[in-house]
Length: 295
Ligand code: G1P
Image (cartoon, rainbow, N blue to C red; front, top):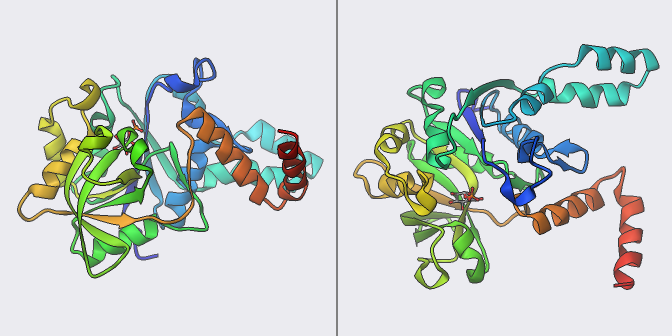
């Protein structure tokens, strides 16, 4: 695994207001997607890309996340006694995935502020950021390609971009880009956080995967609150894009992405993932056909 030294940062301190009251006492990252909390998919993705040190930035109700990645000896012993090896290994999987660390954000001042909280743990090294709302299908690896690009382009910032319906660009960071020799990679010349459709530089949306140099911390320290009064990671990336000796590239993702940050998309994500699963798909797919015929 060539990318071993990278650490990953997963911001999980958002308030999850779109899912209230489900998120009143539970972080949205713990909402189940089929039978695993959303954040486990993200940790699995980082582990799959060779990253074994993961820092989760937590907010209130943090205990659920910490507990999920800890072992539960009583439960494991019960399953062992019952001879339920399959469930036992599923319970243990979340503990064995990676070395998980936690730091509190303190105040929800925005994604840029959350990432800055990782400065001490990450130190003077490049690192990856994975946002829990965007689930990337394990069959369409994105982070590995981004880490490869990072190496290939000499350590500049690499972000993930995806074409979206122009009517939806106001929900994302949007990128102004120039082509490169690789049809799946663009040079990012500018970034704007959640622009109005008519002001967006393109319909290429920033999706939640970033490979960042440590210089981003220095920029975040002086980044003023932007859109929504929050310190925006996109604004720091805009500065990197125009700074001499830095630069930002975008990997254009054309694979399967599930947005679990929105209620409707969350429901769609569960149905899509369950329909593809070997254990649930064979029963779910015919039922879905029958059900949709009644609509
Ligand atoms: C964040 C980023 C935004 C990005 C999005 C991807 O916004 O600020 O640039 O496009 O994640 O999911 P959020 O969805 O947290 O408001």
